[in-house]
Image (tube, rainbow, N blue to C red; front, side):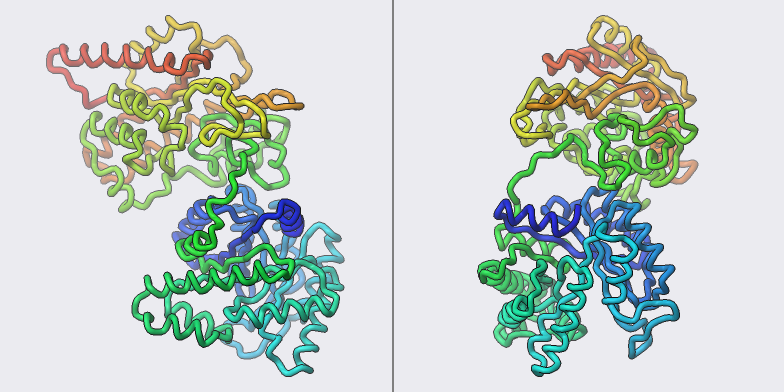
Length: 604
């Protein structure tokens, strides 16, 4: 969706909106940390984000990759910066093609700063001389596909009248060339900004103006940023902050209140401006504090259209169904299915495709450094210690497992005690969902889809288990005709008690005026594709440790000998029924092990 469409929708809903800016980091670890941060900050409710473009396109590939990731994996509308600096026409065209293929509909067109090491800006051969040239080129090549933004400079209001009027004339020419909205440079003098907006409107510019707001993070950072941009600082603001320049916490606390006051004045000034664009500097806390001070988070709750996050890339926007196996690793799922030959075909890909299930794209990784992994999971020496880690995760006392990058979802808390008990009995759970029998689509834990609907779930469990315990479990499962299962080992030998070759819907919704929506399924082909990733993640956990260490051997042996199993209880009216066979089999197994001569419960 275009930014102007989002702004217009917020206007119709009479709601204040906000957006965030990020810049590409310099290191791979910095990039991963930033993407994690963008995912977290998505929960703060921005309408869109934008990604900057360094002078000369030094990070152009990284900017394009971040746009692709934010559109496709994070599922948030993204605006891409694009500058003229050191950018021949061919490079601009490539960047625009990449943006379009990612589903990006918004571009901020800038002349840009001089390249590093140069005092003056100069065009490259075959490049663009002015920002307006870039605007005209985008319009000529792409019609109205992109919303195009340009920069606005409120401090031009302080220039001598002739210079000020000339700058306003240049801005009007850009608008007339096809610009849809204006991002302003950061400012701290709100009166200058208000006067500038009135001058902009007086020359006939009617497009939305998005004020650029920079949270005050630290004294040194504030000084550096304002000095670099030659930003005018009101005396009252300097006087409030400078006495505390050696106390960053105090500077941020005072700065948050002062910037929030400035934001309120903008929103209350009857300028037709109902949104704020935050220059985050890739930091989280300062922006969050400012939104909280403005009482803008938590924002009005919005119902999820589906129980999983939708992608905004063009080929995936109509996706309405996914296998449950990647529930805790959506990035991996999206990347791996990105190029499946027949996608989209109304489901999640064509199992006949030679690309189906191939480990590619995002790749298989536990996304933890060795140091972080050791802090999280220690050095387990027995199976009991491993099952204890899984139990702690289910209870919310451990923030991640190799199969789940983030803490358990809210719905897991409903069954957390039962899951923890399962793990202590020897079933190492990596995915689950509780049974849900027709809760409102607005429910805070389970809700998704349009208003006035009802959502349902079958109870689902996925876990690793030892062969002997599995045999006991299946003997109990087979007594309940409502349970279906798939069992697979590392080699790919598959067993099941289901006689259907089609998918089994485990999540569905009933909504007014719509067909039944079935967004989450279990079926054999995708389970076999997921199997490789599930076992590989366990092997990567083993590789955290020295190859000959007891921990490495223990985990590696588990992955070599245990089975991966998924179980669905098809009677969603009985929330506890799925657990009964596990508790019975687990207790029998433990009793057998306790009574066995020279028994060992550490191996698999």
